[in-house]
Image (cartoon, rainbow, N blue to C red; front, side):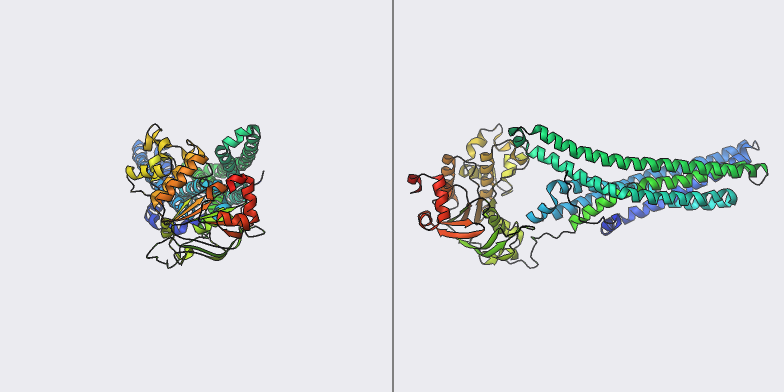
Length: 588
């Protein structure tokens, strides 16, 4: 099983949260004060109990017992009240910080280009924004509600125990350091396994996501059993690491009980004879045992919270790794404003290579496209057609050269302005979960039903939308899973038409259409967007043979530019593509 790389070292949870603590300082201070009050109430109870035993029960003073019993009840009620408010405030702080982290991750990932998405992967980003955030949330909540009173109880209990009886209290001088050392060993043992666990969560999510999105391919090639084995392998590894962590936690839980019981036995062994000698009262011994239980209980709680630290620390590092990445496609410091958008496109000496690739995908590419004209790009698989379209839409940035729209470099334009005037219909059209109308209005949120139907008519999609049970209000599954590939492409074209950009980028957007539908669509587009710039990427010669200009890409470079007739005579690559697709009569 191949694990995703985890290049970053785990970050401190506090360093991740510190910049976001501002809005939560007041509730955190309130929680601290309430936890101190709760600890005082808990420490007051053993003293009251000792007095009840020594001066009430043993002397037969019922009034003393009832009076001090009332004090104990009041202290208990105060403790319960503090606990209730602490849990409420702790939940608000933890959930608020979790929400802030998810918003920060969403905002950062929303600006990622293909490079950053490829670095992390969709499944890992989902895990980081859900499971990893939950790990940090859980640590914050348990720290505020369980860990915070531990120092008060440990310090206060130690002082009060020493004031009661120094010889018996010295047991704590040995027991507490042993407990703290146990915590240190626990963290050291759990950290590597916690890091591995989060990486296996990524793997399981990735395999599950691939099976869901690729279910048709899996069934078409009868690969169900292979995929089950692949998932079982990832799941088994995840379970094995989880069990390893569970064993460590179980061992240290047992160690805590042993330390607490041995400490109690030691206090009894030391305190018992002192009672016989008259140096210690029975109530004081009971109080000492209670203080031992409270102090070692605080150590045990700390140990329980610290079992969460390794996973939370790894999760914080994984979250911080995403937040630390600056998108390679960012907003310009001072955006250029284009007063009159016409749609003139110029690609000049553009070179681009993907990280880790031996050779650039595009090298020295230059072309131009003008309003009212159709420029087509054709080439063999892997020639860089889609990459060029992504560069024009600025989904990625060129390594060298420039792409200009109406004289302005796309890197100097605000991304919103560029997206508003450059419309992309990708090769794999994506539809969101929602109604047909909801998806179309991504192009123009203010579009009324009349405009929606007009766009559908032009895109040759009106007929099948009318045939749907609820027309525009028909719900489409996520990714467009409830419609065919050709229907998805036509809906995506209609969505782009509603945006009314000056430049249309059709990245093999007609590939899933039959010839008759494509001809009708092309004719409708030639009327509807006659004054716009059209850049059409296609595999089929029939889709682009009537274009005003055809650019032939080969191995990432422009081999030839011309009309269909000109390229037949001048471009061997184009002639070969034509020969493989058209008969002699069709090519003429």
